[in-house]
Length: 414
Image (cartoon, rainbow, N blue to C red; front, side, top):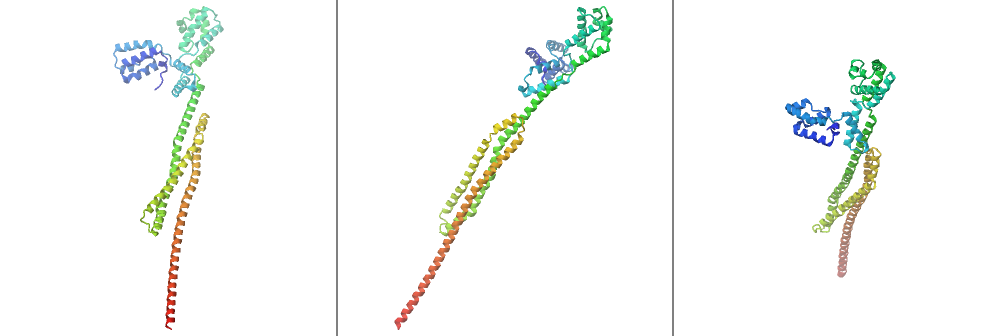
């Protein structure tokens, strides 16, 4: 909603009276139009009274109630100047106050003035020029100056010679009306005062003040955007690190599960079966223990990575880094992108170490399982060879015993 600069210039009592009139006489759908009409024209428009369906008596009553209030309304330019003058500490204004100040300054910088900004300055020039045209000073000169000044202030020009001057009583203030006509008819004199008057009626140059407000607004918008980017970084960076950890460690758990199911468990069953213990419950116990061992190692590694991520994040002193950038008016997005990359690079470096540790666990476990399998194979082969040699030795022994018995029998026969 636009600010009502003129109405705000009224006293608290008059503003309250205006509010009461709006509440008591105008339906809710017309209240805003009523206030807008008072602000823009200083009166209630006939169209608005017609929309309200007021009787002539009510119209007269409303006008009578408003008259003591609206007579105190300043011009729009006066209200704008008063508002601007009241807002002296621009850097400490709220955003809403800055926008209102910007509106007021732009209005003063674009709208022609409805009153002379310094009528006394023009009055002094009139008095000086009257003297230069041979009109002597003194009481009559001051009266002439006042009459001409009052006309100029209301009409933004000098009065014309002849009937207009006669009606103003100018000729009655001198015994030489021709001198006044010379003053009023001289083209150079007309041009001179036209320039003075136009200078006071032209829009005020508020470009410097407008730029100050615009710079403050732009700076705040930039800092607000930077703070939003920083908050987004603080809110999303931990989540990004969490997702990266999950993306790294979840496959490690899947790999451990596949290893246990596809490599370790079958090997345990085979070894225990070779010893006749396949139904002893030791298979389940060994598999459960292996799950706890490998998954525990991965969970510990993930917990250590979480601590590493937190410590690295906290060590960067981002609060100070970003605060310095914002206060300097620098663009933080590039720094944020760089820091995201640095966090990710540090995490990838850590992952490489974690991967190496996990790989060593897997490789050691695989080596141990392979060693057990090789030993079991060697042991079986050795036992088989030993049994084969024993069988051969027994066969040879039995053969020798048979030969010896035969020899003895032959010798006995002889």
